[in-house]
Length: 194
Image 1 (cartoon, helix red, strand yellow):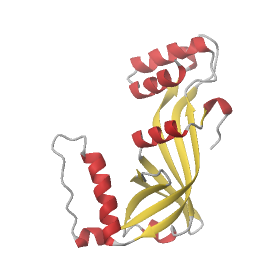
Image 2: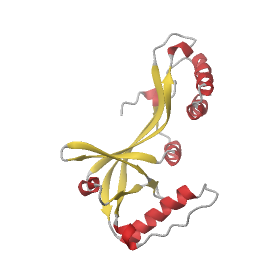
Image 3: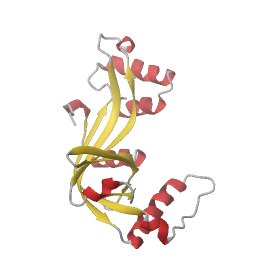
């Protein structure tokens, strides 16, 4: 990912906080000489060394992943930025947050390990619901998926949030995003710029 210096995020706590808030990503690899992508929820290991996910066994993507270096991309809020919002002349652009993670894959098919992963994912996403569902997975369900563990080798994080613009342009852009309902991006800009 192209990351000019003023958009680069290197602070580990910020990167992992962003990942926690935007954990639905794209697992990208090469299959038969062409890029392949699967859209999946990911879970970061407690020691922050591994990303975990699972694929349907019928999805042939998993069959080429063992020991392959892959790219996993995550996206935060994003929106168009009009130069008409600036006090100083500028050009049309797009503000966004993105995280790229490179790592090496390991496939696992052990039912106990897959059950642990699926239960952890379920707990994470069910925890905010009024009546959380209690996971119950039979052998047939667990055999229908394969687990993927990605050992994290490199993190690239970019917040393109008008940091390259004069300070007097920041608040008008935030105000316009608020007005248009792009609240998450406006909040990210406030946190980064103000």
